[in-house]
Amino acid sequence: DQQVKQNSPSLSVQEGRISILNCDYTNSMFDYFLWYKKYPAEGPTFLISISSIKDKNEDGRFTVFLNKSAKHLSLHIVPSQPGDSAVYFCAASDPIYNQGGKLIFGQGTELSVKP
Amino acid sequence: NAGVMQNPRHLVRRRGQEARLRCSPMKGHSHVYWYRQLPEEGLKFMVYLQKENIIDESGMPKERFSAEFPKEGPSILRIQQVVRGDSAAYFCASSPPPQNTIYFGEGSWLTVV
Image (cartoon, rainbow over all chains, first blue to last red):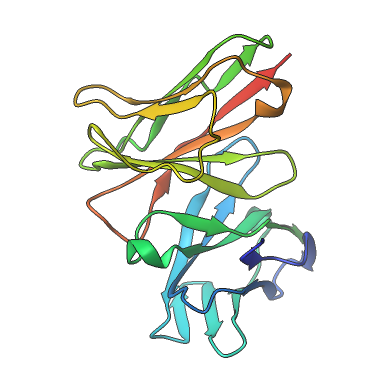
């Protein structure tokens, strides 16, 4: 029962272009979402989050969009840089914890940004 | 600015041995979480602890796995009688009293041979 899904295992983008990573969820009770970035042999690093009271949150080159009716969120990176090459995980906070630390993760999307 | 500290980073155990993974949360953080990442999968929640209390262990396998976060010292994830299927990356994360974002350590990679 995969409640958070990232259907694209990999994505390749040219440097300077936009990267769009997608995430779908099934539980309408989810109200807080996070994106983490992970390099090989390292722990996930928090990137950006969004609460369900918003439909967009922006931080520098990173923007997350939330479409509650479609149960879909996306992470936009613009412009993409080679250093952005990593695995990106979408996660939802378990609503029981009122936005606490029990997260349900997607399978991840490996982004490759080519110079 | 010490982050979440995990050790050992890499651990090799033979089948049937015990594995102990340690986690020191970030300064000021009193909530600890353990996650596991099996090969080719996303991270899966295992357990949520506060000092001397297990709050939620719904993601822990029913047997052989245990976790603690004592009043003094690091949190420990203990796996008894390891099997090949326990080979995975184990990540610890911490947060201040309940907060939206949790911060992960570098992980401990367990290999069972």
